[in-house]
Image (cartoon, rainbow, N blue to C red; front, side, top):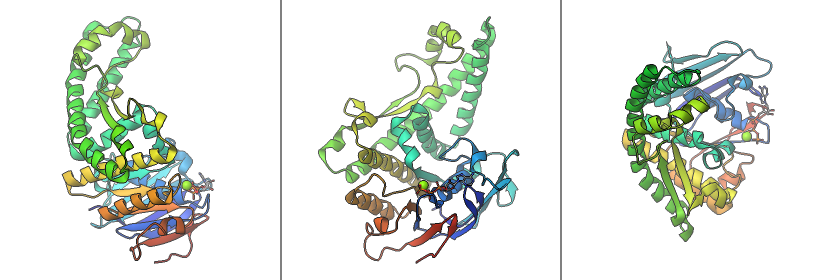
Length: 364
Ligand SMILES: Nc1ncnc2c1ncn2[C@@H]1O[C@H](COP(=O)(O)OP(=O)(O)OP(=O)(O)O)[C@@H](O)[C@H]1O
Ligand SMILES: [Mg+2]
C-alpha cells in the first residue's frame, strides 16, 4: 500500500509554508474559493509525477514572491521524497537523499490518480490525455514499457527530422522505419494486453456506480495508432508521400487512443457533466484497482472538488466505493458538510481547513 504520512509545501502558488500529517485513509481538505485546496493536490501530483495537472508551465506554480518552490513528503515506508524547482533553474528531485535523473522510481513509489476539472479532458479532449491515462496503467504494470516508449519517441523524432528535409535520405529513413516498427509493436502489444485486462475491471466498477440500463451502452475501444489491417511497415511505406507533405509521422503508437463511447457516439457528446464525472471516476478507480491487483500496491487518489457536478446520491456512492477500497484519499471541497454528510456515520477521517494558503483549525 502506498500512502503519504507527511507533506510539506513551500512557495507553491498562494502557499507560503504548509505542513500536513495525513491520515492513511481519508483526508478532507476544505476552504473557500482561492484558499489553496487545488494547490495542495497539485503539489502532491508535481512531486509524484514531475507534472502539474493544471499547467504545463511549472514556473507559474512557484509563488509570485519566491524564487523557488520546495515540496517534501514521507510515505508509509519512511521513504523521503523532495523536490525543488527554481524559476530559471532545473528541478532537483531526491528519493531518500539520492538525486534522481528522472521520475521513474518516484512515480513507482508514489502512484497517484487524480480527478479534477481538467480530468474532463479524458472525455472531451484529444487522444493525448487518454493515451497518457492508458500509459499510466501500462507503465505501472509492465517494467519494460518505459524503455520501449522512450525508444519509440526517439525514432519518431528522428524520422520527423528527416521528413522535414526537402530531399529525404531514403536509406536513413529506412533505418528509422525498421527501428520504429520494432518498438511500435512492443508498445502496441503492452497497451493491448493492458487494455484487455483493464476493460472488465472498468465494466464491473462502472456498472456498480451506475446500476441502470444506460450503463450497458458505455464501451471502451483501443486504437493502436495505425489501421488494424496492415503492419506499421506497410502503412509507413504506403503513407510516405503524406508523411513528407506534413513533415511528420502520421501513423504509429504516438497516435494511439482509448475511445470512450456511449452507444455509437463519443461519450462526451452524449453524457451530462455529472454523468461524465461518474464515468471519469470509474475509469480512475478501475485503474487503481487493476494496479493493486497486479502490484499489490494501492495508489493515492487526489480528488479535487468531489462535490462539484454530482448530486448527493452520486457523491455518496462514489465516496462509499472509494472508502471501501482502503486507498489513501485526499479529497477537496468548498465546504465540509457536502462531503461529510455523504459518509457513513462514524467514518474515520482527518479534516483540514485551508485559509489563505495555510491550515486553520484541523479537526479530527
Ligand atoms: N504563482 C502564484 N503565486 C501566488 N499566488 C498564486 C499563484 N498562482 C495562483 N495563485 C493564487 O493561489 C490561490 C489558490 O488557488 P487554488 O486554485 O489552489 O484555490 P482553491 O482553494 O482550489 O480554489 P477553488 O475553490 O476556487 O477551486 C488563488 O487565489 C490564486 O490566485
Ligand atoms: Mg480548486
